[in-house]
Length: 233
Image 1: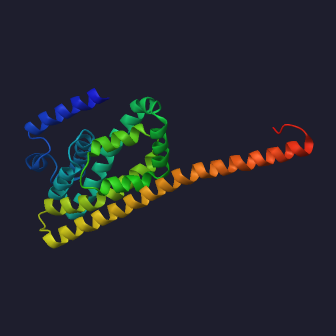
Image 2 (image 1 turned 135 degrees about the horizontal axis):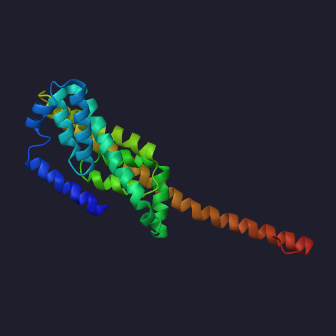
């Protein structure tokens, strides 16, 4: 799978050098082409996003080709499609390796599975990180596909809107841009604190409950054995 992605990435580099999926290409093949142009944009944008093209470029070109509203919508759809292409590749070829991970990693995987939407939303809000590696990690894990997709779409919206705005030629007030960055940072921090607290709470309380239950069962067994003279089952 890694070799295949590396090969696709190399083809992507060649396509960039050949002038594919830039403004000139959009002018020639997408703008003014109606539904066929939109479908071509979605297909190429999804493929390039799946192998590593920054989704911000897709959203910028969406705004450039279709304007703010349609550009935001089509950029969001292309990003989501590319995300799920990589996710399902990893799910098909990477789940066997994930099943052999250590117990601690499996415990973390179970936690992410139970909190897939929130964890995905947190990662998508962060300005740093690799979109492709996030998709690969999610696909190789036991995270649910639907909450991962919904969390990705919700997390993609702010940056998609910003880059579609820029691509459409609308000037974005620097104060508004800074305020949006601050809000996203605060929301990401709040989600991170929530998930960390929930993770600690689960992994702290669960062993305590198990010890209490074991002690209760042990006492009950002793009492039954004393009363009936039999070893409890």
